Image (cartoon, rainbow, N blue to C red; front, top):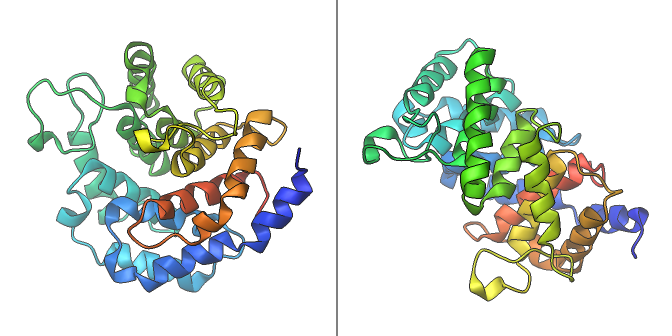
Length: 279
């Protein structure tokens, strides 16, 4: 099996953060607010410049509330990014967007990615979107502890009833951002299910039949989710997943704007930063 030093050397040589930064800067006029999380690995990197932070900050501050609040995941992605670039928690942008998010809560105490006005009566919340709201409210101090506990209770019930709708890896990412780790049984159970579903080649089945024998994009997302809730390099599941990603690294670094693998590049970079394999 490949060593940690080998992984660190190979991933560092590929310049994943720089590749992601270039893609974003080359397409800055096309950034959708829903995808502002693509900037997060760069913003968390030790090599992030103040110039890049200012570009992201000015982009967010140039948006009207209607643009930010078109979708719940647009609002959460915008606020999480705004916090990372040092935006003011006391700003109108944070206050108005937070209030809009709170107003989208559904009858079952969860959130859907669509706004309430676009959903039928009795619509159910989705785990990944609800977890994104949880992480956002924690980041902007937008709710009291009891309110946040109710969100966790919804997620716990939804895990039992629906297994988070089949998107447990995305839900884990946001729970990790919100500080919810393996001390919670739902997180342990979700991580265990992902561990058990890893394929012999180190990958995870993709989101389509075409990638049933190993989806590169989903593998990067799963690695992000597992490391977000504190799985480490000492875990063989993580190492095997990284080996699969490493064996396909050229496909990731050749990601194009608008393609699915830019999401893979972002998710893999986030996992590698947490594991201290890149800076």
